Length: 394
Image (cartoon, rainbow, N blue to C red; front, side, top):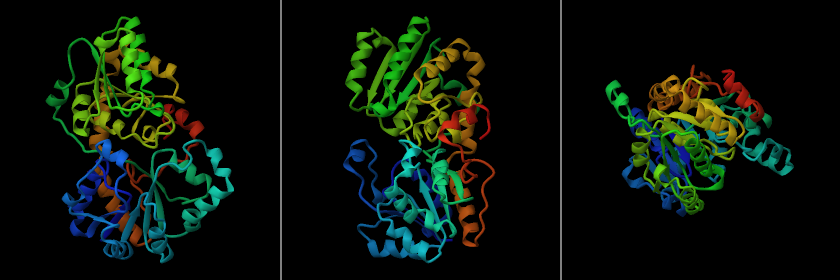
């Protein structure tokens, strides 16, 4: 089987999956990069030397060869490319296609009533509803958005991002968390409003007032960093915080391995949230806003992590205080989180399911996985998602 993945550019979140596909398919796998990476992403450390990856071809350098592979491959998976015509040619010919998308209406499904927007979505998605094309939903809220516009009926499946997997034997796992009488909390991301880094400071103030021992590790930079650092100083919390600034992905993982709790406080504008994969892989107990795309797919509330509703700080704080008050009762969730990534949500598992699913699609067969990547994506409205999670109906 020849398989091509076309998307805007390769990055560290996609390389583990592509490496796994290349190990399985060899030269029959190609990643077509359709545009150079934006300077903002380069500045964030996302840049990759594409010439070091044998499966990458750049559309803007080898257009004829890239177009040939897209046209002739048995199956092509399209991410966001900025060139819809690339997919249209295959779809018009009735050839098997997989599409990958985060949610359409991050700012609210009320945007679906826009006539102009509906016309664009019809051209890109709805008109192919009966053809040999499926949608891989990179985030749990995408399925509801596509269902709302009548696209891909019965052909919406779970997908996401698959950062590099780290594995540990039992002894290494048990030894990697500090045993200094304090709980270590990690927050990682850009210091921007949608990610709410200020929540970590508010939480620290509460934990200090309650008399708990803790340390907060904040990794990343951005427009709010200076303000956050100043607030920590003004509150006299400097001894409880460590700021790392921009941190390379491998170093982020090193820090996470030494922390007990991972806070992910982004709001509903966060399509996925790959640091949750990384925190779970590192054995952290996750405390995550249920509005982000990763949460309903990876987290089982109370089993391998905790979620709070609607971006509400007060509910997040309650969860963390409960963890501190009864750590021995809840610490097992870190191990369960690690096992979720090790056994289900990782690049090797995703690549294997993708190859199996694509082979079936070539023959007109749709065969979802039982769980994890390529399993059926439940259609749950954004308003009902938190309740579905806490009632374990996903």
